[in-house]
Length: 306
Length: 251
Ligand SMILES: Nc1ncnc2c1ncn2[C@@H]1O[C@H](COP(=O)(O)OP(=O)(O)OP(=O)(O)O)[C@@H](O)[C@H]1O
Ligand SMILES: [Mg+2]
Image (cartoon, rainbow over all chains, first blue to last red; front, side, top):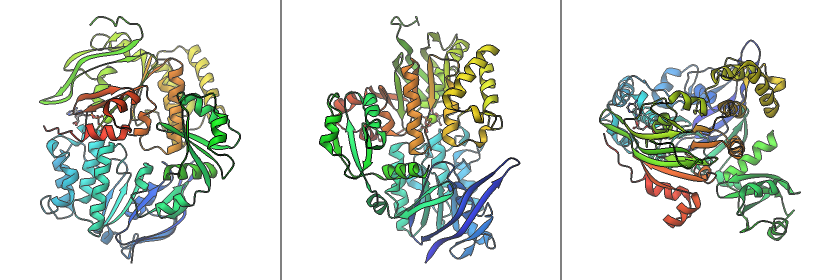
């Protein structure tokens, strides 16, 4: 069965001077127990979609169902089934960490104790500060509290809008361990993220931009569809190297990727030897043909869209 | 503290500490940053990065310790510091309901530039960002990447010696994130020192030196290359993991 069904949804925001299309005829089916990722830049429309599913925003056109309940007609049923973590902080800044959590437990008629197991991995990290007001937590600590609050009533469906933005790399790993655990308990999870490495951890992903879905597939299939060649290149002078690579005649794009640059060119237009020749003025040069990452694929897609 | 002897040290911090009640958020940190350097200030959530940064830009009083920023003492000369540094928080600090041109004028005014200077510099900026045609558009109507460029350009509008950036790329798409680093490189090339926090470990590689903070203390500080040599680990991600996993802070 599908846990979430989105059918031809459009949403525009109108102001006096202009109209912004946040969602442009979006359709999507998410299976029960699936861990589904929405990958896309800020402003792509992800948050509008989350708000519609969380029944706090009405679509202009189209419909959506969560566990067969309609987001417009049956919004009361839906609210009990979902845990929603909005992108912007949803916390009461003047309440303490513990009071925030208690508050969310109470409105869903449960207690912290009853579902402590579900949140303990993430809540443990901020529990030492449980008497501190939420407003005084660091950015990443606020994210951890907001997630604990979304989970406290053991929802069947979790809607997480950029839960790991501002979260440090160690906590991000732990965070995804927790999502995997929740999934194994049968919870359906829809999560958006700007971190491309997290896309690999989803069962399926949708790439979304300018209110449109560019592609929906398994992460490995997205990578397999990439039809260009890609090289990882490094030298002693990375700044100069980037310029040289961008000026290379076959270059489609070149961007820094940590300790190397990734060069994208059309299939079979060059090989390692040709590149080494072209870059002969560089010292400690290394050129390797590599498999693309999701980040490479996504960047290529963004560029060809623009 | 005497002014740093070597001219090219623009931030000098000694045993800087901040306590909130019984809780020590920043615990006796010491380090120096050189002129023109891109200094990455990394650390786990709650490690104390933002707190340390607020003390360095003169908006939060330290509990103890010393710091000299752009040649000025953080206790006695916070006003001079503010005139000589730029700051950009994650929220960009732009006025969304003002136009691009109005934002430029407004910030020029805050930084104490006179009308002629503002006029000259805003022409220069509009040209550089290619914003002439849209200068009367509201900032709220701009794509995120453009806002970010404008916010950064305004943070360095008054040609500060140092610019402090607190997670400037959090939540940003991969292309915009890299374009932002182009701006950082350019600023550094023009002699502006860059002090930046990030949770993207690939961005750590773009810094000349990085520090890794855990539970209020600096646990490692070096160039990315030297750190990898010293730890015998070939990715910053893994070094960060090794250090930050040991965090065990309790109240
Ligand atoms: N005004 C305050 N009162 C009490 N505690 C505070 C206050 N400001 C910050 N803290 C605490 O100090 C610690 C460090 O916070 P800080 O914001 O500096 O962390 P950070 O390294 O910037 O983290 P992040 O990566 O999540 O942004 C946290 O435990 C935070 O809750
Ligand atoms: Mg911070």
